[in-house]
Image (cartoon, rainbow, N blue to C red; front, side):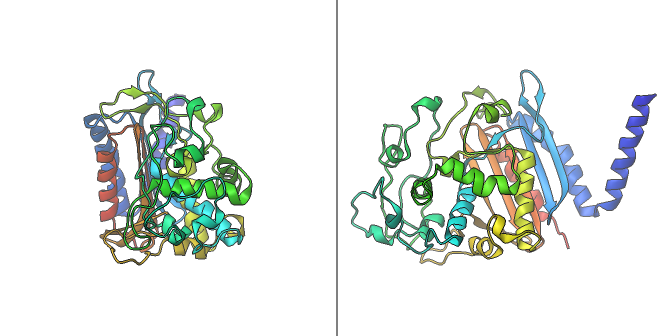
Length: 370
C-alpha cells in the first residue's frame, strides 16, 4: 500500500510540473527522455547528464545510464566527470578575477609575469603575446591539446610541460604573428596556469578552489584530483565503451577540471545570477567581466568567433556562447544563450559522447523560449 501511495505522489508531482512547463520545453524533455538512451546505446556511451536552464531555474535535468556499467552504479548529481577543455572557461574566470584585483593587465604582455619560464626565441615579437590574446586563442601559440597521464606521480611540472619535457609533452612557442588569426592553443592556457601561480604566490589548484570554485558553491569540483574527487568519479571509456585508465593532467588549466552535474548547474546559475545582478559581484567576478568574456575579439581572420574563454555559436535563437570539452574518456558541452536566457550542460563518460552532445545541442538550438 505504501508503494502505491509513493507512486501516486510522484505521478501528481510529475503532472503538476508538466502543467507548469511550456509546451515546447515539455516536448523537448519528452524527446530527450525517449531518444537519449538509444543514442547512448548506439554510440557506446555508458553514462550522461543533461540539464536545461531558463535563467537560474532548472527546467530539465536527467541522469542517464551508469558511471560504472559493469556494477550498474548509476550516474547521480554527485558523479564526477572530467570536462576537458571547458576547464579553460573556469581558468578564464580565474584570470578575470586577477584582472579585477589589478594583479594582471588584460592587455599586458604575458612575459611581464613570467620568471620561472620564458617563451623560446621566435621570429615574432613575444612581447605582443598578451593576456587577452591568450584567452581568445589569438596569441599565435603552439600546442592545440594535451594527452593525459595514467600515473599522477609522473606528472611533469608546469615548466617542464611548457618546455616540452618529457617527450610526451610538446614545447609551447610562438609560431604565428600575435593578434592576426585564430589558432587554438591549450599551450596558451598552460602559460596562464603558470602566470596565476606567479602573481598569486599560490598553487593554481588552490587559487582556483578558493577564488572561483568554492564561492560558486561547487563542493565536488576541483583541479586537484585527490582521493575525495576520485571516490565519486565515473569511470572513463573509449569509443567502444570500454573502460580505460584514469588520466591526470599537468596542463590543468587547459584540460584538468573535474566536476559533477550538481556543480555544473550551480555554475550556469551563477553565470545568470551575475548577469541579472542578483549576486554580489565582488564575491566571484563582475557582470562587466562576464560581458567582456562574451564579446567577440576582433582580428583579421574572423572565421572562428571567440571571446575570452568562450566561443560564440550562430543558432536559431541568435547567438549562444559556450565551450566543448574532449579528453580520451570524456565529452562535455556547455552553452548559454543571452538572447533567450537559456543554458545547457551535457556531460558524458565516453570519448564517443560527441554524437549525443551534437544531438542535444541541436535540439536545444531549435527551442524557442520567450
